Each structure stands twice: as structure tokens, then as C-alpha cells.
Amino acid sequence: MILSQPEIREAVARGEIRFEPPLEDRQWHEASVDLRLGFKFTKLIAKQGLKISLAKGPGPIADAGLWREKVLKREDELGKRETYPLEQDEFVLAQTYEKIWVPRHLIAMVEGRSSYARAGLSMHQTAPWIQPGWNGQITLEIRNSGPLTIELTLPKICRAN
Image 1 (spheres, rainbow, N blue to C red):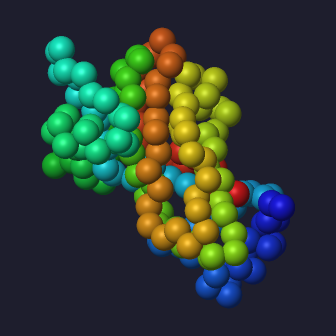
Image 2 (cartoon, rainbow, N blue to C red):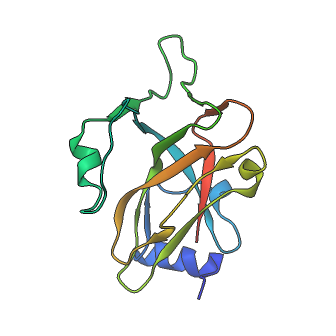
């Protein structure tokens, strides 16, 4: 069952579902909310000739020291909004701006926005379920399959229901 906007709002009012910072009015939809892109981006860096087996899980990737992080500021030294330029065929992990709390009796689903998909931007490659009891920021798997560089900023980037 998918909750309607009034049901989500009631759950938020009761403190069962929480968003930090609180959602703005423009983020609410009939049966979902828009989440915004946060400031932290993580990219897996290719290393020539390196092979990693995932037979025992993703640990070898983390242990190989191949991840690089970039944390944007809301504004640069000149007051301009910082962006992350996602090149064609580039893949990056990013976190949502909002932290969410999901109660133990519900799951949430994270989906990309169709308007961004039309430009070749896919938002969540796998595991769209946010498990019961989850709390924290959501890690998004973002890929640019389109022909253009896309500047990622702090707009609403994905939808949760």
C-alpha cells in the first residue's frame, strides 16, 4: 500500500516519519515527496589492470582505496552555488540533503524523476527500498547516460513514497 499525502502528513505530525530539515510545501505531492540532492559526492576511480572479486561482498572495493569524495559548499567564495558536473557515462554516489526516519512498520521507495531521465540522468540503479527502521540520508546511485554534461545542484532530485 502506498500512503497518500494526507497519510504521510499525519505520520509526520505523529513523529512516525521524520524529515530533517523539514520538507518545504513545494516538495509534497499526492503520494510522494521530493528529496533534494545533498553536498557529498563519492566516485569510484578506475585503476588500470586492477581486478576485484565480489565473491565475498563489496568489501574489496572499499579496501582498495579507490573511492574519492568531494563535498560541495552551498556557495563558493564568491557567493555562487557550487555544482558537481556529471560527465557523459559518469557514475557517482550522492546523498540526499534530507535525513529521513522510516518507522518499523513501513518501507519507503526511492525513484528518479522522469523529467531528469529524459536528459539521460538515472537516479537510483538498484535497491530502491528504504528498509523499515531506516534513519539517515539516502545514498543515490546517479548515472549520466545522456550526451551532455549535467550539473548536479541542490534541486529536488528524486521522489520517495
